[in-house]
Length: 376
Image 1 (spheres, rainbow, N blue to C red):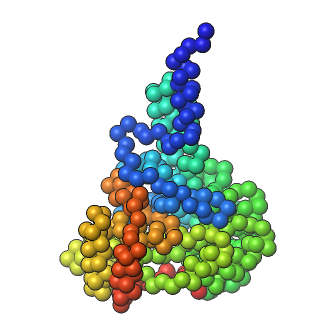
Image 2 (cartoon, helix red, strand yellow):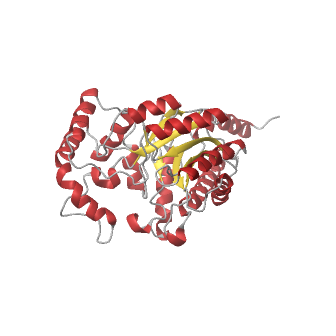
Image 3 (cartoon, rainbow, N blue to C red):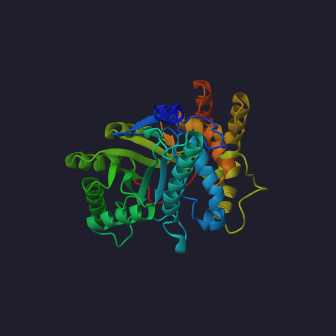
């Protein structure tokens, strides 16, 4: 006779494969994050940037913060965020590569805790989660001056995978273009990305800080090699100068635009003013001192819209980026920030509110400075 309890437990685990992942005791899911296409793959409609994980200069990182960062990680994973943007250069000096290391450690711990939770609930120690909730790492490989050959980029990808303790990247990206200063290296980078895909080290490729002209060239070469492009990412927020050309270029290339710094390094959160700036020595201090005066009308509009919809300024700014068809990747270093970011999903700004924000954004005289490696 088959015992009823184990059979019931098995049925519940099988059902769990078709629904959302189990939520750990005490964890709170703020909003369920949907999924969108990105070239040949699907990614979560909201991502998480890991630039701050290991960055002492801008974000005052210290390894003692890792436990709090993990709580943020667990929160957004429970909510359905799968795409994590990182880079092999993320981490200050001796902490270089720290973000990738933490991403690997966090995911292993997350799955272990899920398995333990599954065991405590069902008496079975194997966690059966939704396959669509699998972590997706999008690593940017830096075009260091010594990475002159295509093989050097393949080696870099393997080193990233070693830090992650994983076998395959979701997306391998070049961190920036060298077209403005070393056109010959640019070609090697492209071939290197193609080789990474051909060797089965990634599901697709992508670029960062490419403008529409350079993206088109890259896309044409990848098509020749039958290498799929998933994403192109640029700095994109209410404080950045924009046009539709990059959107059109992404559509032509069949990839998704990733918007990094959707909160303009924190300026759009409403937290800062001329009397409350980042600490002395932080490069954001002088930057905000220059940008805040001209941003007041925009910040006023952002605050008004936030009050109208019952959300925070950060949540409105992120939702605005989503409304443009991009996948924003705000960072999260603690549970409060994670919950704040997740509050940007599960609802939609009206067309009127988007237009009001567009108008206010267009009126900003001094825009956020462009990344020095951004190409046309």
